[in-house]
Length: 193
Image 1 (cartoon, rainbow, N blue to C red):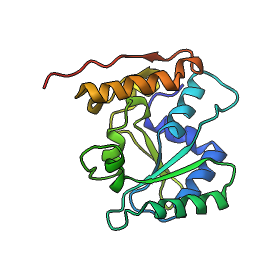
Image 2 (cartoon, helix red, strand yellow):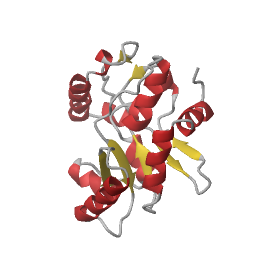
Image 3 (cartoon, rainbow, N blue to C red):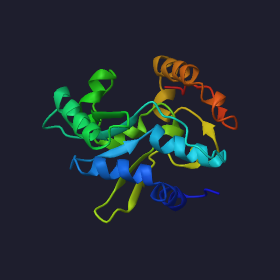
Image 4 (cartoon, rainbow, N blue to C red):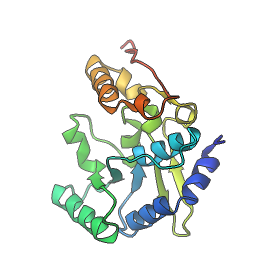
């Protein structure tokens, strides 16, 4: 049973394919990099549901933070390098130093700041490797919800009706309950200003 951050890191460390993906991402030498979101969440939920096969994820999100080069073409160059190394992985590389523009939000201060503003607490996770292949986990919204199979909006998505609508639409489209039948999805409650 998964109980804490160490258990999550151990779970990932024991998954050869996840470690290969992490090593590939590390090889790019990106600033403030993480593989985040479904890459981590889905592995945890698959384990908690005792799935023998890993569920398919639509993409493997590699994020980094580089204010000095915010050209989208640079992200594509990194994606291409990852595809050459591990072509069976659906890579997606994004520089969070520019993604606030695409998301119509104030600038992020780091990759972890961007992760903290993902729509769901259970998805606001990232992992990377240090130089000794130790798995490092970041969970700016905590790990309680992902471990307890709860899908709730991050506090950032409870600040306005517009963000709440984005969360609600995403939950409808993802339809995670059809895959992970034990999760509980919570609606947004808008915080008072």
